[in-house]
Image (cartoon, rainbow, N blue to C red; front, side):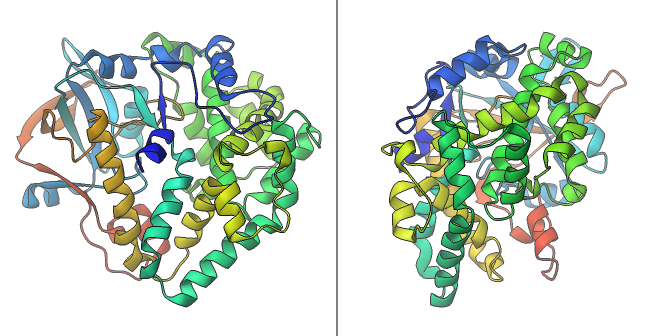
Length: 442
């Protein structure tokens, strides 16, 4: 599994990217170089403050918001959450300054929107410089598929049959558009940009993974191309502007405040244009074109096995075994989403999700990664590897001063536990499985 985990990480120490399938009009490395060199904020992809801190080998300071401070005090333990970089503790970077710890703009956003939560400061002291390798959840399809194949005996025969059938039927139903994505990635777009975006929006309910791709492509577009005064201020601090995509997500999906579910992200062309005109009007005209080119490329790279020829693949009339060979990552993403709709998912959750988390911890420990970050873009979403054993850490409660800086107050006697918290204590559990009894979450 090491190869699969390595493939799911992006190394920002180099612009080179693993090769995608054959026949693509542009390689992943060409795209990476273009984004870095030809966008207003592309220099932040490798030159941002968070990556510099990791590579320095100095102490890493992070902030975490929690509704369960008293549970943490009582147990002396902190657990991870599935969905947070596979199984870490969701944090934002802090930068030490003479008068306190300055939150990354991701952190200031959390402080504004999570005011009902307590704030913790976590200091991790690594034993060496940390590789600037971030995990890209868009490339976790093989991990999802491997977890399903290894643990499918936990499913009943009926559950397994339904899951396999549903995953294949969804791909078949969406095959015309999925084939069009591959054709566009190979330089042969089959529709005009506004039509493409409408077709994309119509296909997301069939293939929820496209909602994740759609959102991340737009996040990339906004953060790298923005020239607003706010974006420039954050760039001077070595940070990408997270507020851009946060505004987009919460404006596009009414239920985002209950569950941040990107499978629901599906604005059509007119709606997309209207949303971006509110966020940064100058970026609205180019959004549809960017989505068509970039999403098609990313779909080919994240869906297909690298051994495939994208120009020769078709999803029409496919079956489970064919998908497992030709597009294992897409199949894994489909199986993952179907699994979450199972009535027994609360019971299955610790089997399938803990297995992935353990795999991630093992990889991060081998690579010397104490603080994994979102590797699609190094935008400030960072976590804690709760199994890290090559350094030390300390945790404090924290207060915010009038200047917006955090100040550690009380050091807590806690231990990091490399285990996922109960599903019932997560946003997914509360939103999708309301009949379960809630337990304290960290």
